[in-house]
Structure formats: C-alpha cells, structure tokens
Image (tube, rainbow, N blue to C red; front, side, top):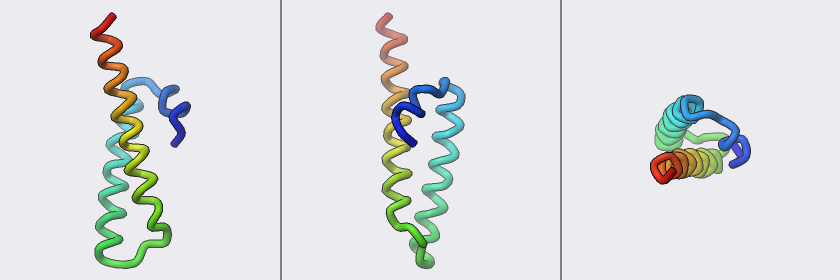
Length: 67
C-alpha cells in the first residue's frame, strides 16, 4: 500500500487496515516458521506498510493537538 493510498483513508479505515495487516503479518510469520512461504518478501512489505500507517496516525494526532 502506497503512502498516497494511506493518506486517502480516514482514521477509522486506517485502524481497520492496521488490524488486518497485523493479523496477516502474524499469520505469515507462523507459516514461515512452520513451512515454506511463497513470497518471503511479503513479510517485509507488510511490516513496512504497518509502519507507514502508524506514522500517519501519529502525524494526524500531533496535527490535531497542535492546532
């Protein structure tokens, strides 16, 4: 997910997407530990997307309190 797509989401959608990605990351890590996964790079991509969402949430919260 690109940063432009993340910025287009509202706060509720960001939270839903974050929970979904964290669950997907957990499932991928479990599968990677127990068996071979098709795309090992997916773990890194999901982890980075989670970080982007958390960063966007933090920026929105600091903008809201600064105004």
